[in-house]
Image 1 (tube, rainbow, N blue to C red):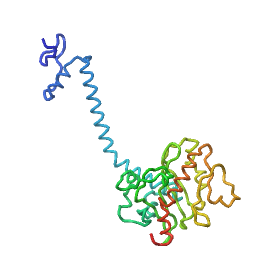
Image 2 (image 1 turned 90 degrees about the vertical axis):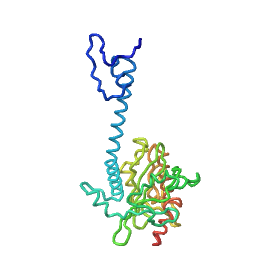
Image 3 (image 1 turned 180 degrees about the horizontal axis):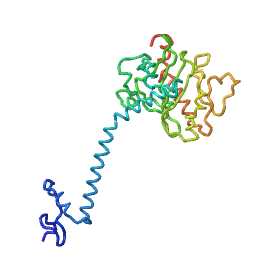
Length: 288
């Protein structure tokens, strides 16, 4: 005799289960099995997992516009903060509207209309071989692997003159890639601010890149020496103000030598020939 349950006859002493007739036959059979039957246990578990997966996927899709909007607001906050314009109660969108958002062709060193600067995702482009370049090991001092061909910059003007220029920068520290913004004064030679908005460095050590006191040490530092050579760096130890080179130096992070070196390397990369150097040169000459 078959051990399959009879869908029409209940077991002795048991109430007949109510099984919707529109369910597929195999599912109806599974539902009529005793609750402790292994096949029913596995079937219910699989069905529950499927339903939960659908709910989670649906929620992720539904919430994506909100998440994208929050990320956009967060980026604006960080740009305003590095420019010294983030104040309590400030209207983020209104304050950010002061900036010109421009795309820069890094190889040519000029502004470009090849992409829509407002919506262009430089970080995503860096992972696309068609929109990025593979860096040679000798050039890749920031350890980023690939560099997007186009970068987004943020220009704050005072009339026709540039007041601040915000550059996106990133590079590897000890445990993670640090993503941030470097702000330059209108002379394009003086640091107005540096701020990282994403990293996974050790709290209390490399994580001190977030410390407002350390960030403040960057303000007023000069990029170049009298021979126009890039000299800006994070040193090991404390800067001695009386030394000539102090104007190009920032105190190292205590106990975080590799993170400090990583910050120097990413700054040197993005201000160098593989980064924004061609653009900054042409911008000074009015040819960007």
